[in-house]
Image 1 (spheres, rainbow, N blue to C red):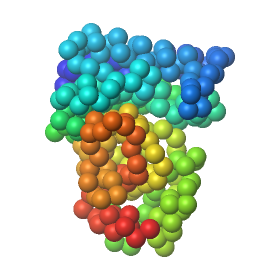
Image 2: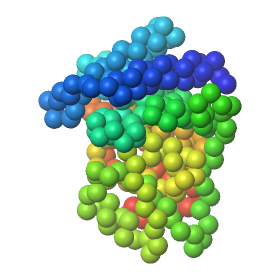
Image 3: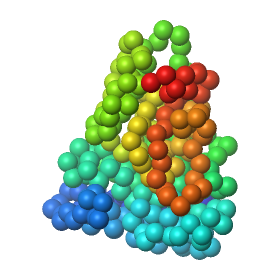
Length: 265
Protein backbone atom coordinates (compact mmCIF):
# COMPACT_ATOMS: atom_id res chain seq x y z
CA UNK A 1 0.00 0.00 0.00
CA UNK A 2 1.18 3.53 -0.74
CA UNK A 3 2.82 4.97 2.40
CA UNK A 4 0.66 8.11 2.50
CA UNK A 5 -2.49 6.07 1.90
CA UNK A 6 -1.46 3.67 4.65
CA UNK A 7 -1.04 6.57 7.09
CA UNK A 8 -4.41 8.06 6.17
CA UNK A 9 -6.15 4.70 6.59
CA UNK A 10 -4.62 4.42 10.07
CA UNK A 11 -5.73 7.96 10.85
CA UNK A 12 -9.31 7.28 9.73
CA UNK A 13 -9.41 4.20 11.95
CA UNK A 14 -8.04 6.15 14.91
CA UNK A 15 -10.71 8.81 14.48
CA UNK A 16 -13.34 6.13 13.95
CA UNK A 17 -12.44 4.38 17.18
CA UNK A 18 -12.90 7.65 19.06
CA UNK A 19 -16.30 8.07 17.42
CA UNK A 20 -17.27 4.50 18.30
CA UNK A 21 -16.39 5.01 21.96
CA UNK A 22 -18.73 7.99 22.09
CA UNK A 23 -21.41 6.11 20.11
CA UNK A 24 -21.47 3.37 22.74
CA UNK A 25 -22.13 5.84 25.56
CA UNK A 26 -24.43 8.78 26.28
CA UNK A 27 -23.63 12.01 24.46
CA UNK A 28 -25.07 15.48 24.01
CA UNK A 29 -26.54 16.71 20.72
CA UNK A 30 -26.40 20.33 19.59
CA UNK A 31 -27.60 21.98 16.39
CA UNK A 32 -25.83 24.23 13.89
CA UNK A 33 -27.31 27.36 12.35
CA UNK A 34 -28.68 25.27 9.46
CA UNK A 35 -30.38 23.03 12.07
CA UNK A 36 -28.20 20.03 11.25
CA UNK A 37 -27.09 18.03 14.31
CA UNK A 38 -23.56 17.99 15.69
CA UNK A 39 -22.15 15.91 18.53
CA UNK A 40 -18.91 15.66 20.47
CA UNK A 41 -18.09 12.74 18.15
CA UNK A 42 -18.05 15.04 15.09
CA UNK A 43 -15.63 17.37 16.84
CA UNK A 44 -13.42 14.64 18.30
CA UNK A 45 -13.01 13.07 14.87
CA UNK A 46 -12.39 16.47 13.27
CA UNK A 47 -9.57 17.32 15.68
CA UNK A 48 -8.02 13.85 15.44
CA UNK A 49 -7.94 13.90 11.64
CA UNK A 50 -6.77 17.50 11.28
CA UNK A 51 -3.93 16.97 13.77
CA UNK A 52 -2.87 13.80 11.99
CA UNK A 53 -2.95 15.36 8.51
CA UNK A 54 -0.96 18.39 9.67
CA UNK A 55 1.67 16.02 11.00
CA UNK A 56 1.75 14.03 7.75
CA UNK A 57 1.57 16.94 5.30
CA UNK A 58 2.18 20.23 7.13
CA UNK A 59 2.09 22.30 3.93
CA UNK A 60 -1.30 21.10 2.68
CA UNK A 61 -4.50 23.01 3.55
CA UNK A 62 -7.50 21.20 5.03
CA UNK A 63 -11.21 21.70 4.47
CA UNK A 64 -13.43 19.94 6.99
CA UNK A 65 -17.16 20.08 7.51
CA UNK A 66 -16.44 21.21 11.06
CA UNK A 67 -13.80 23.85 10.29
CA UNK A 68 -14.41 27.55 9.77
CA UNK A 69 -15.31 28.54 6.18
CA UNK A 70 -12.38 29.55 3.98
CA UNK A 71 -13.08 32.32 1.48
CA UNK A 72 -12.91 31.30 -2.18
CA UNK A 73 -10.38 34.01 -3.00
CA UNK A 74 -7.94 32.13 -0.79
CA UNK A 75 -8.72 28.51 -1.62
CA UNK A 76 -9.15 28.97 -5.40
CA UNK A 77 -5.34 28.97 -5.71
CA UNK A 78 -5.01 25.58 -4.02
CA UNK A 79 -3.79 22.84 -6.34
CA UNK A 80 -3.72 20.20 -3.62
CA UNK A 81 -5.57 19.96 -0.31
CA UNK A 82 -7.38 17.63 2.07
CA UNK A 83 -11.18 17.43 2.12
CA UNK A 84 -12.76 15.62 5.07
CA UNK A 85 -16.07 14.78 6.65
CA UNK A 86 -15.17 13.73 10.21
CA UNK A 87 -18.54 12.05 10.75
CA UNK A 88 -20.72 11.51 7.71
CA UNK A 89 -24.19 10.37 8.67
CA UNK A 90 -24.63 12.15 11.99
CA UNK A 91 -28.35 11.34 11.88
CA UNK A 92 -27.48 7.65 11.43
CA UNK A 93 -25.13 8.03 14.38
CA UNK A 94 -27.97 9.48 16.47
CA UNK A 95 -30.36 6.72 15.41
CA UNK A 96 -27.69 4.12 16.22
CA UNK A 97 -28.09 2.13 13.01
CA UNK A 98 -24.33 1.91 12.42
CA UNK A 99 -24.38 3.52 8.96
CA UNK A 100 -22.00 6.41 9.62
CA UNK A 101 -18.53 6.88 8.17
CA UNK A 102 -15.26 8.77 8.40
CA UNK A 103 -14.41 10.32 5.00
CA UNK A 104 -10.96 11.60 4.02
CA UNK A 105 -9.99 12.67 0.49
CA UNK A 106 -6.98 14.27 -1.12
CA UNK A 107 -7.89 16.68 -3.92
CA UNK A 108 -5.39 17.41 -6.71
CA UNK A 109 -6.20 19.66 -9.66
CA UNK A 110 -9.87 19.74 -8.61
CA UNK A 111 -10.26 15.94 -8.59
CA UNK A 112 -9.94 13.35 -5.79
CA UNK A 113 -6.69 11.40 -6.01
CA UNK A 114 -6.94 9.53 -2.69
CA UNK A 115 -10.02 8.43 -0.79
CA UNK A 116 -10.62 6.65 2.51
CA UNK A 117 -14.00 5.73 3.98
CA UNK A 118 -14.00 3.96 7.34
CA UNK A 119 -17.12 2.42 8.87
CA UNK A 120 -16.44 2.34 12.64
CA UNK A 121 -19.43 0.20 13.60
CA UNK A 122 -18.43 -2.72 11.34
CA UNK A 123 -14.68 -2.02 11.37
CA UNK A 124 -14.61 -2.02 7.57
CA UNK A 125 -12.40 0.34 5.59
CA UNK A 126 -12.60 1.20 1.90
CA UNK A 127 -9.72 3.06 0.29
CA UNK A 128 -8.16 3.96 -3.04
CA UNK A 129 -5.34 5.92 -4.62
CA UNK A 130 -5.57 7.14 -8.21
CA UNK A 131 -4.08 4.55 -10.54
CA UNK A 132 -3.72 1.90 -7.81
CA UNK A 133 -7.18 0.34 -7.56
CA UNK A 134 -9.80 0.28 -4.81
CA UNK A 135 -9.70 -1.93 -1.73
CA UNK A 136 -11.84 -3.18 1.13
CA UNK A 137 -10.38 -4.24 4.47
CA UNK A 138 -12.40 -6.00 7.15
CA UNK A 139 -10.80 -5.49 10.55
CA UNK A 140 -7.12 -6.38 10.37
CA UNK A 141 -7.46 -8.85 7.51
CA UNK A 142 -5.56 -8.49 4.26
CA UNK A 143 -7.15 -5.78 2.06
CA UNK A 144 -8.90 -7.15 -1.01
CA UNK A 145 -9.33 -5.35 -4.30
CA UNK A 146 -12.92 -4.48 -5.20
CA UNK A 147 -14.52 -3.97 -8.59
CA UNK A 148 -17.85 -2.46 -9.49
CA UNK A 149 -20.39 -4.62 -11.27
CA UNK A 150 -20.63 -4.76 -15.06
CA UNK A 151 -24.29 -4.31 -15.94
CA UNK A 152 -25.70 -6.77 -18.46
CA UNK A 153 -28.72 -6.29 -20.71
CA UNK A 154 -32.02 -7.26 -19.00
CA UNK A 155 -30.22 -7.67 -15.68
CA UNK A 156 -32.13 -6.41 -12.64
CA UNK A 157 -30.77 -3.01 -11.67
CA UNK A 158 -29.96 -2.48 -8.02
CA UNK A 159 -30.09 1.11 -6.75
CA UNK A 160 -28.92 2.24 -3.32
CA UNK A 161 -30.55 5.41 -2.00
CA UNK A 162 -30.85 7.44 1.17
CA UNK A 163 -33.76 6.86 3.52
CA UNK A 164 -34.19 10.60 3.94
CA UNK A 165 -33.93 12.17 0.53
CA UNK A 166 -36.88 10.67 -1.34
CA UNK A 167 -37.68 13.71 -3.42
CA UNK A 168 -40.02 13.68 -6.41
CA UNK A 169 -37.03 13.82 -8.77
CA UNK A 170 -35.67 10.60 -7.31
CA UNK A 171 -39.04 8.88 -7.63
CA UNK A 172 -39.32 9.99 -11.26
CA UNK A 173 -35.80 8.77 -12.02
CA UNK A 174 -36.38 5.34 -10.48
CA UNK A 175 -39.74 5.01 -12.24
CA UNK A 176 -37.89 4.72 -15.57
CA UNK A 177 -36.71 1.22 -14.69
CA UNK A 178 -39.26 -1.54 -15.25
CA UNK A 179 -37.65 -3.79 -12.65
CA UNK A 180 -35.58 -2.48 -9.79
CA UNK A 181 -34.06 -3.76 -6.58
CA UNK A 182 -33.92 -0.94 -4.03
CA UNK A 183 -31.45 -0.77 -1.13
CA UNK A 184 -31.44 1.87 1.60
CA UNK A 185 -28.31 3.12 3.30
CA UNK A 186 -26.97 6.20 5.05
CA UNK A 187 -23.78 8.23 4.55
CA UNK A 188 -21.00 7.75 1.97
CA UNK A 189 -21.31 4.01 2.48
CA UNK A 190 -23.59 4.09 -0.58
CA UNK A 191 -20.58 4.86 -2.81
CA UNK A 192 -18.82 1.83 -1.36
CA UNK A 193 -21.74 -0.47 -2.07
CA UNK A 194 -21.61 0.54 -5.73
CA UNK A 195 -17.81 0.22 -5.76
CA UNK A 196 -17.90 -3.36 -4.48
CA UNK A 197 -20.73 -4.43 -6.77
CA UNK A 198 -23.59 -4.64 -4.26
CA UNK A 199 -25.47 -1.96 -6.21
CA UNK A 200 -25.38 -0.63 -9.78
CA UNK A 201 -26.30 2.99 -9.15
CA UNK A 202 -26.58 5.60 -6.41
CA UNK A 203 -28.75 8.51 -7.57
CA UNK A 204 -28.89 11.71 -5.51
CA UNK A 205 -31.35 14.50 -6.25
CA UNK A 206 -30.85 16.71 -3.22
CA UNK A 207 -27.92 18.94 -2.35
CA UNK A 208 -24.77 17.64 -0.70
CA UNK A 209 -21.42 19.17 0.15
CA UNK A 210 -18.09 18.42 -1.46
CA UNK A 211 -16.82 16.59 1.64
CA UNK A 212 -19.76 14.18 1.27
CA UNK A 213 -18.70 12.90 -2.15
CA UNK A 214 -14.92 13.24 -2.66
CA UNK A 215 -13.63 10.11 -0.90
CA UNK A 216 -16.42 7.97 -2.31
CA UNK A 217 -15.83 9.28 -5.81
CA UNK A 218 -12.15 8.31 -5.68
CA UNK A 219 -12.98 4.80 -4.45
CA UNK A 220 -15.67 4.33 -7.08
CA UNK A 221 -13.45 5.67 -9.87
CA UNK A 222 -10.73 3.18 -8.98
CA UNK A 223 -13.19 0.29 -8.80
CA UNK A 224 -14.30 0.95 -12.38
CA UNK A 225 -17.25 3.28 -11.79
CA UNK A 226 -17.99 6.96 -12.20
CA UNK A 227 -19.78 9.88 -10.53
CA UNK A 228 -21.45 12.32 -12.93
CA UNK A 229 -23.59 15.44 -12.74
CA UNK A 230 -26.71 16.29 -14.77
CA UNK A 231 -24.61 17.02 -17.85
CA UNK A 232 -22.65 13.78 -17.71
CA UNK A 233 -19.47 15.45 -16.45
CA UNK A 234 -17.43 14.01 -13.59
CA UNK A 235 -17.73 15.89 -10.31
CA UNK A 236 -14.94 18.41 -9.71
CA UNK A 237 -14.01 20.33 -6.59
CA UNK A 238 -13.25 23.82 -5.35
CA UNK A 239 -14.48 25.55 -8.50
CA UNK A 240 -16.90 28.03 -6.92
CA UNK A 241 -17.69 30.06 -3.81
CA UNK A 242 -20.15 27.43 -2.60
CA UNK A 243 -19.02 23.96 -1.58
CA UNK A 244 -22.50 22.58 -2.14
CA UNK A 245 -23.11 20.05 -4.88
CA UNK A 246 -26.32 19.64 -6.85
CA UNK A 247 -27.65 16.36 -8.24
CA UNK A 248 -25.33 13.51 -9.15
CA UNK A 249 -25.39 9.88 -10.20
CA UNK A 250 -22.82 7.34 -9.03
CA UNK A 251 -22.61 4.32 -11.35
CA UNK A 252 -20.76 1.04 -11.30
CA UNK A 253 -20.60 0.44 -15.05
CA UNK A 254 -19.45 3.64 -16.73
CA UNK A 255 -19.91 2.17 -20.21
CA UNK A 256 -23.69 2.08 -19.88
CA UNK A 257 -25.54 5.23 -21.13
CA UNK A 258 -26.86 6.27 -17.72
CA UNK A 259 -27.02 9.92 -18.79
CA UNK A 260 -30.06 9.02 -20.88
CA UNK A 261 -31.99 8.30 -17.69
CA UNK A 262 -30.87 11.57 -16.10
CA UNK A 263 -32.12 13.58 -19.06
CA UNK A 264 -35.37 11.63 -19.37
CA UNK A 265 -36.60 11.88 -15.78
